[in-house]
Length: 255
Ligand code: GCO
Image 1: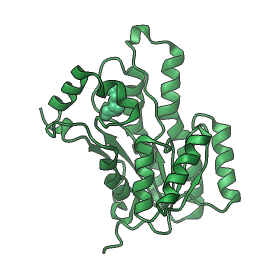
Image 2: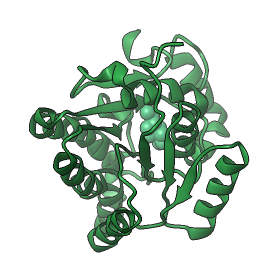
Image 3: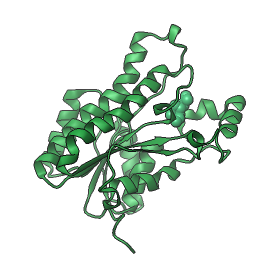
């Protein structure tokens, strides 16, 4: 089998990977041979995810930290340095949702979403890229966008602004880091069956809207995002930079 998609010998840090899409990304990369570093703020959830991956024979370790806390991120990378763990692949997946009409939205809630969904990618990406550049053997950064990187939905303004920013942050990172052999791209998930979307899935009107709005006529599954993450983490994408790949059932491509 081609080694083009083989991640053996590479180590990946996936933020927000104790569950949902982040866990699916971690599992997908592990199945392609990568060692994976699991992150979330919750120590117990990180430990559970690590145990699940190890039970499947994968090389996994935990690294709980708050992606919005610059000092905590620096300390986490210092701990990896001390352990001799070098991050070759970073997936900035950590994200939250807050649904409210803008005229009722508190600034604190706006800021919390922007900090978690956008600024964290800068904070964590900077720490990872500094080390990738110093090592001189390139690397991969994958930022996680959304359909709202392209089109807006009412009542999720901070999430939409953050995900639009993520698409352009990937391009800004590519502009500065491509010369060092680092590829930076974005994955744009459609409506996927994750905990964050439980309220939407259980709302018959919203559920019907999702199924009517994409030609595949269904919600996506977290495991359906694994292949794109492996592709963008592997040698197969060494000349792909600054792109966004929508894994959305065709939503954005069909009227
Ligand atoms: C929402 C959802 C979306 C999806 C996804 C769509 O409230 O509309 O949470 O944001 O999670 O981002 O691509």
